[in-house]
Image (cartoon, rainbow, N blue to C red; front, top):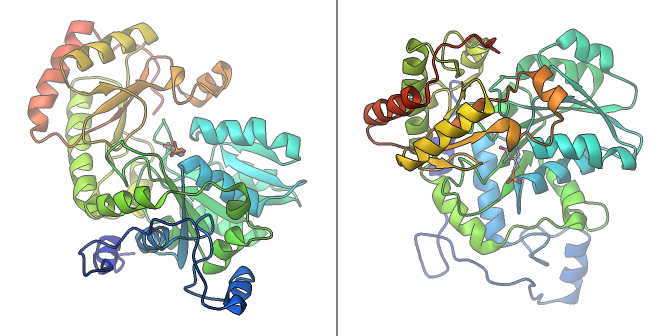
Length: 408
Ligand SMILES: *Cc1c(COP(=O)(O)O)cnc(C)c1O
């Protein structure tokens, strides 16, 4: 892991435009001509490397972006999709067929949870949701038809960290695929190096970083990527969540600054988390020693990229959380918005937004309390100034060391 530096790998990828441009040219075509009919037949059969057929299958710019993201995750190959959900659903539908079983972390993105919980059962794919670091419970739930263990490296919104090495050992023992959504920790954690079989990102978040598009990617072996693009049986080819070439061009350009942005997001989040904690607030951040997965994250991460840009603050009640978020927005400290990875701080109350797909009792059981605010800390130049202003808002709203039970 120490020898692998994804930022260097990406930096070394050099693509020129058609006329020597410093950025690759965008191919503005849905379909491609062939010089011979035989080549067209071979391409349909999947036998011709470097030949483009139809842009739902592949397009030059999507291939460039996919290659760069495969470098990011140290996998053989990757495939980009129109959204993170497009990547998650394609990967899962490729691996699982009717009658199969999935074991998933119970603290995952609300959309993924809804897909596993509501959408798949009518297709006879059932999911058991568990605390992802309860290895005994996981092993006990493995059935002959289990195909996948699914988790997020750093979970949404509770920032629980999955022990990818341990999960990978279990997967190898029972011949399961380990699928890891690494959206919260690009560059910091490289799941494939720790044993994940498929690594997924919502590009919408840190990787693109400008909150101007949705996008996704799954990274894995060349064989798996080819399977998903097979014209007869590929989940991505047949479900069709294709990213547009113009979008992949802009995401590739933004990817070029990811290493700098992640360092700044992590630096700022650490600064605020440490001070909020000293102030006696209920803050959760994997960079804090008080976080129960602090040591685990340290053992998996690239130190130079830090513990990421996400932290949570428990305001006690939904009312206090809403009051604080509205005030912080008025003070121009960030935006009351879902999503993450933007230059500006974004905050939302998880229970009533991105995790609202999860029923109330289950949210409570997981520790998603009503007043839990998720912050995606921005790239603020002077984070001390931001801290001072946030502290003022917190005091105004009256959030202090209240007695609610800490989740970490
Ligand atoms: C946003 C998000 C997704 C879904 O991605 P979209 O691009 O919105 O489809 C999946 N997983 C995580 C962890 C996310 O934050």
